Length: 501
Image (cartoon, rainbow, N blue to C red; front, top):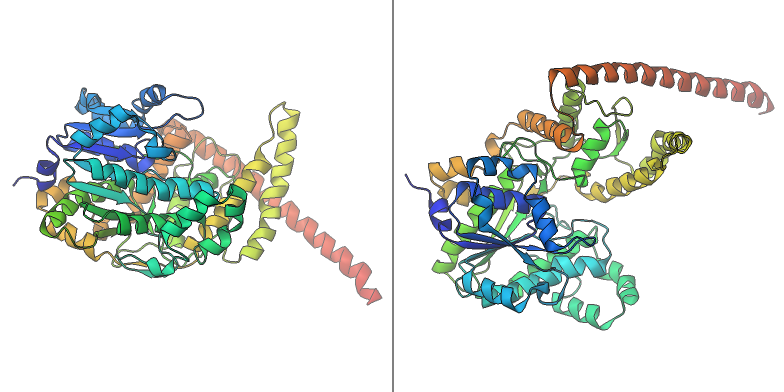
């Protein structure tokens, strides 16, 4: 039996934005490893003074590409970086490069986005919404275009708890065209002052501008073979191309890392609600497969609405935040890392007010003393600064960790059922059979290897356990002293104040 997906991509040219991000890197890797694409162009911008060529050379050395390079040593020769910037006019792409893309590209996967929840609206609008319009305009110039996948988010319509695979323009305070007009005619300061009124019920600028981006597709991509992919919270890879690969400290990964590090001890989360988390490699397979499905649907009905493919845990195999935290925590105790700075533990609350009070005792006071120690050692104090970032991130995540969202995945499930057994094996994204315990082990191994830079060897684990046991004793001693001091304070208070009452 042949693979429909592999056949579709054979000798195709693909254009990708967001290729330097987590999802984009794994999409490129999987296309090169599993299919016979002819060429992959991906947009690369200058960053912090580092030019496109230098960033591309660094990109090629990423560990996620090692398996590919071993299996296909010449595969990266099929990858061509295109200098550009999603925030610039016409994507910052030169006329020459634009002509090449217009003449050669068959498939577009637009994944570039700012995932900072509290990004100023001006900046979030530029990359998460205006860039969608610019990519759509470029797609209209592509003479060979067969499929255009816009990567959105499962939370682009999080103002409702039961999210279906449809557009929700009724939740926007005003149409996207009007938002663009205001953005272009008002000063940045005035526009930012209007942000709360524009955002409305959306919890942050990220989800709001992603919702606007979807409306751009709905209104301006008519006639194009286009569809939308809505992934939930993406964690590490599960099995491909390597187990547990992560790409830096972002979102929930940062929180799990900080707990294993012994840095975070108070978490704002509802342990009973479902955790909408998915493996990165499964997401990549959905994105790749959805491009094929979009091309088929477009040929059948060019006037129909763009199909939407949501991807989240299925109802038959859900995982709560409590189970996720417990699995990761137990793994951290069984296979402790050597880089921890204190005994890893955390307490959880669902009350933002109590959380703001609690972090003062759990984090800020210890952070203050640790910064003093750093100063005495001649190092730059950073604990209080890092704790502020963690607290902001925790509060930003709370709208998604305080309630259960039900994601309708009718289109995605139908796509899975329509796939051949060969494609299901090569491009697996079946969440009903995902072993959560095994995935959490993979996740923690990845955090250990790629973030802590701590190889999982018997010697490293043995040293980690010695450090863990030492910090356990220190932690219990400290807590005993604190309880004694608190008891003494209460006793003195009762002894001296009670008679006066």
